[in-house]
Image (tube, rainbow, N blue to C red; front, side, top):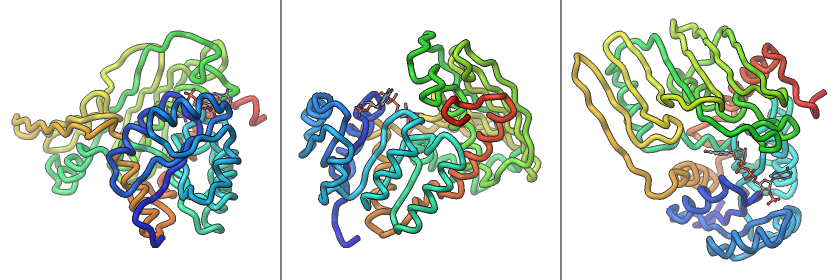
Length: 329
Ligand SMILES: NC(=O)c1ccc[n+]([C@@H]2O[C@H](COP(=O)([O-])OP(=O)(O)OC[C@H]3O[C@@H](n4cnc5c(N)ncnc54)[C@H](OP(=O)(O)O)[C@@H]3O)[C@@H](O)[C@H]2O)c1
């Protein structure tokens, strides 16, 4: 790219955008340059708090700013496709919140567009970049727990029922699978570097028609079974445990945002704690930023193929539980 720093713009300064803005301040090669909101007051307030240089009252205006190199998208799922397309058409690199789109049809089209325009496009699956995941990777690569046979992961929180909130809202592509189930799926894929050969899935749908509790059992050719639970009806352990022939690895709660993992072999336990520098988003931002500076079109930590595979599994799971969003019909 021939630059020393990537100047980031942000679209959708809501809840999770706070974590991005806190994290980016700890990445030397990145600058939080601009923020765009459909509401200029929201952009001004957010931008002032995090010392952005530019605040815009529309996404198009920010994308017309030639100083913006890359954009982080933090809007609800339903809007990712349109937002990403707008950014790519404006010639910007993109890091988009999970899930990258609502379904595979949308993501395949955008990956093709990004390739055609030679632009970076990445799903912001931040867990894969957390420091404690480096320890887990080292334990797995050195076969500390032997052959992996079982993975157990739960993402369960108790969210008060509110039909207008994005979690329950079908118009915003709400539901536990796309919001939370994506973490056990994407982390399991990272652990095994393999896609499931088959799965069973069950779900309870809420009054609004989105899944409020989804449970799946996935089988892998290598002889591994993964059990995943995702829901917003009850608080859960929120751990991810990998069982092997010689021991186990636990990524402690909340596994998708973890700072701690334990290796247990021969009745001996080794626990490592890796605190974040800031919100924890700094690691994915650093990975994305360095990839962009290197001229890469995707991030080594999460390839577009990985994202596409998880998206396909979620498509198929939704088909089986009968969850079609109104705007997909
Ligand atoms: N990585 C993580 O740990 C994590 C955690 C939570 C959420 N997320 C992901 O982050 C994304 C955003 O979630 P969030 O909870 O932060 O969203 P949010 O606070 O509800 O909304 C963020 C922004 O999206 C736009 N928006 C919200 N509702 C809208 C609507 N009905 N119509 C049009 N625009 C709307 C608004 O942008 P304007 O200001 O431009 O109007 C808003 O500021 C989702 O993809 C979610 O899955 C990730």
